[in-house]
Length: 102
Image (cartoon, rainbow, N blue to C red; front, side, top):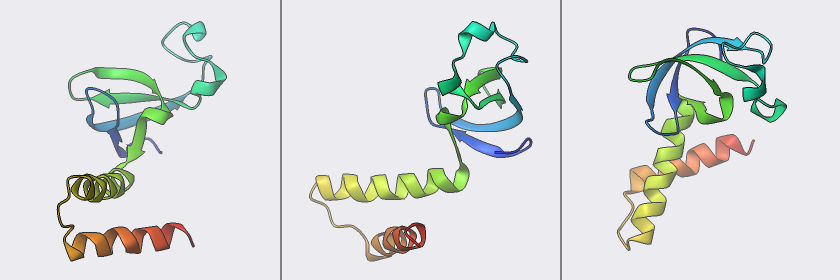
């Protein structure tokens, strides 16, 4: 993720955010003890309701990654409920799976 990228927050409250910058533990606005090396990289994010925050990158994905995830999730939920998966949706998920395995 690069500064200026529009990204998806995949934790509550969720939603579209703006990546402001990547921060290191040393230049964090918070106490360095707040973060561990497992949290790196940490990003400074602008969220519509949370404002400017710092969060570990594992809470964020690109909008493209989010769209792929939710298409796969929709197929899963439809099958779990015993509903038919539209051919176009199954085809998109299959095509994406082939692209990601190459």
